[in-house]
Length: 105
Image 1 (cartoon, helix red, strand yellow):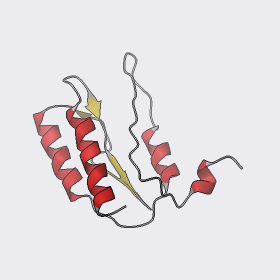
Image 2 (cartoon, helix red, strand yellow):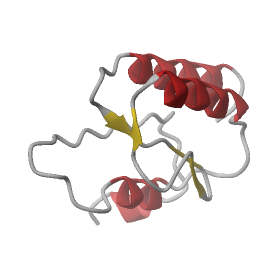
Image 3 (cartoon, one colour):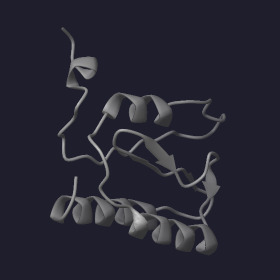
């Protein structure tokens, strides 16, 4: 994903992030043929973490082919604390190099 597609994905990510509320937590992953995370842990939503996330998103750039399955698995790792709702927003252009792993045979 590059050019206009990447720009649109960045805007979507920032829009979702800026829609969070006090008390929410978030974790950002960028994926292609590898996974990068802003932090291995969930971040508390506040002005500082929001500013850091905006900087991290702005630096994202196209690298390699897209493999979705590892990113999906990574986003679902760990337990969801009692009283919390886990929401995963998956932003992609849909062009995957590992469709055979995602779709039933």
